Length: 128
Image 1 (cartoon, rainbow, N blue to C red):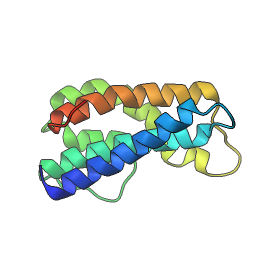
Image 2 (image 1 turned 30 degrees about the vertical axis):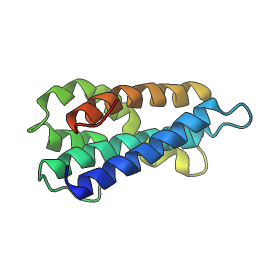
Image 3 (image 1 turned 90 degrees about the vertical axis):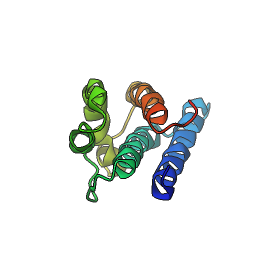
Image 4 (image 1 turned 45 degrees about the vertical axis):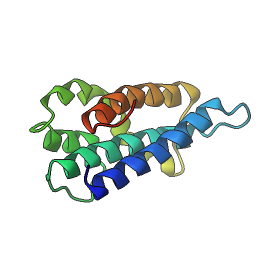
């Protein structure tokens, strides 16, 4: 694995740790944070796979655009289009006043991202 790919994967796992910790919080769980970090985790795994495949990408956060770029090397990832579209909005939506995540959207974000994480890690040759 390329060093930059490993860095992307490590950063994705840091986001994974944050979402897992917040999902277990009994007092004041940060639902906005869970949604944001679930989106970030998916984004970083997409970028890790793009990096490993020598596919350049810009500083974008739209997961569907990143998915389109990675499909040449991971065509089976098409099955995650709906999951990634769901997560994509969380890059921005809950980070500003006026919109707040609830428990249901946070748990859904975590569920969508867990599914994608497993496939991404297998593709990168990492333990699941």
